[in-house]
Length: 272
Image (cartoon, rainbow, N blue to C red):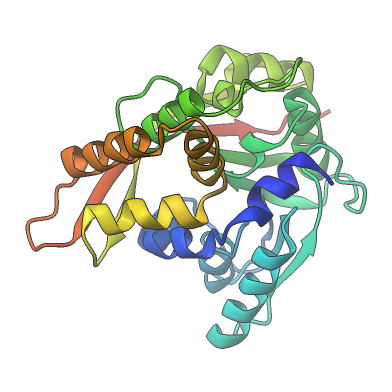
């Protein structure tokens, strides 16, 4: 089984995605999506950005490795009455079913960054985007002090070492790496822009309860807890995550609201 698919099939990311809906809508609102645009949402999950893009009137295709997330996205689209968004299985490193220059906007928010072979991912995103179109990525930043980068850092410390040749998905949060990858795909450095933005996790329960969702349903932390339990460190991992979520919670009403910083990448697809 594809290791990346196995990671995201392991849990139920819809439980985590539900805490992120408002941020997906806010990001899409700032992209200037217009009716009739062709939009690809790569690593779409259950539609946090695909559905808001469709609500703007675009024709949206969501692509993901994970069948259960695609099914959840389809169900959400039906419930919302959206017939201009569809979902299909695909690998961001090899979009074999998608023709060249099909999309006005290729969007990937915390999705394609987890695919293997990042140079192939960049080439594929450029290939399927029309000349003059845009590629927009949201990527977590290595070493960032905010929530998700710290979750992944803590999880890695309790997990077995990655296989030889593994390239961390967090390298998509490094500007020089992003420039190099799109440069190899034919995009000049001057057409790759960056800014820092915030993604909000908004949950009605306590920080400890939100940690429980990550422990039970988020692939990387599920793996970390399994490894920690095997060597007697499960309590230490739990305590680290509880402290992290409690320290970063900014809610004043008994719930949980935590901001995580990410790198927003904006690429303009060159004309030939």
